[in-house]
Image 1: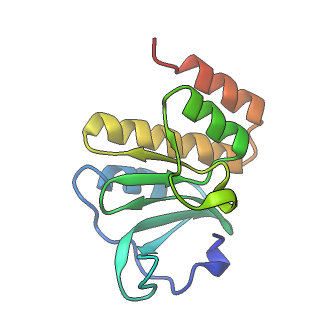
Image 2: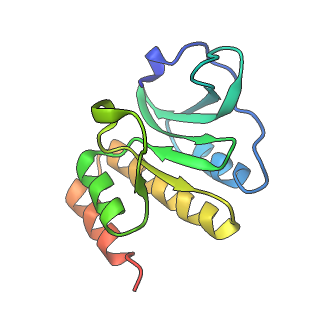
Length: 142
């Protein structure tokens, strides 16, 4: 979803102790717009996390339950899934091709999620996809 399609903008909520460092890190990157992520069925009424955009393009969002959803490209998403660093988004169908998700429960998970968001941020900002894929390959678990 683009920023212009998002609906009403509201401030990012304070998140859990595990998620807040991710949100704060992302909000300090150049060109980021951060806003409340609305519950899909109660837009404008029920906050379900934090959304992050670069210009009009969605970087991804954090849900209050600890799920990080990233709007990756199909190639980057496939590489992250193949390496075990993320899962394909479990809902959304073809419209969400390339989207990935990652569960955040610990500080180590938070560091990994921040890295995933940064990788996707670099993609949106124009870093060549071949470089991003090479970085994913270098970070694969042994």
